[in-house]
Image 1 (spheres, chains in turn brown, yellow):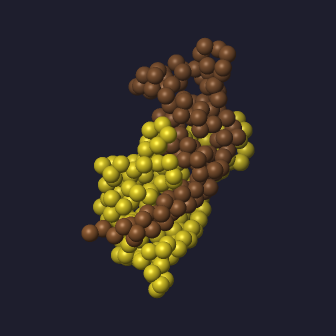
Image 2 (cartoon, chains in turn red, orange):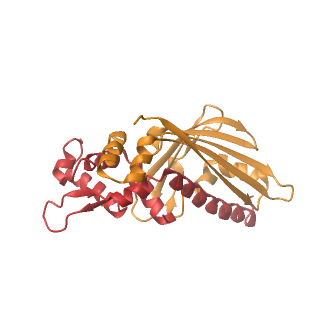
Image 3 (cartoon, one colour):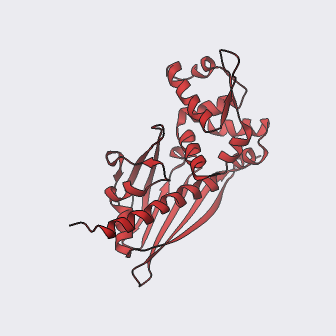
Length: 111
Length: 149
């Protein structure tokens, strides 16, 4: 996974509602209405979560039907579940920025 | 299959062009942590950062995606704080997508104005997580789902 994909995946799975939606979809495809049922949140909120999951490549949504049932994307989940790679990616990305930050503050010493 | 939790370890080593005290401060002052925590493309609003840098103290950082405003929060507890050479912290499972991780950051003064940072992380995962990852099939996904729920 690239750093961009990793950060998208991180964001997608960081939210407990989205993890619960993933869990529900693992039992079979479902519509927005069906997905919203167990949660005390609006359909709009569920749609927003689905968009995040879709963008992360973790789910796919039907194009033709108005209901647009969602289902899991196995391959993406496989990559997402590569915890170690994700963890390493988080830190490698952070350290790149730390390196930049340390150079920056030494160039412009604070009073 | 049992739900055994297994530890996996990774070590990341970096040399920074900065004295050890500076690197330590970058890790322990919110204003500085905000500048680098998380991969590129994420911003850490200062008001979301809380850090109580002492053994047993907690930290919390919320990162916001520059692309779409999505938030992710990193939380944990400091276990060891030995200024300016060693920082040990736990990240509990409920706030992350693993079964908990313990990280040890070691700061070594290289004597020439540079600092070597070694991050050694022990990450706990379950058989279910790995089985789901490896098979990617319906049965495994059910198990993964069970775990995620």
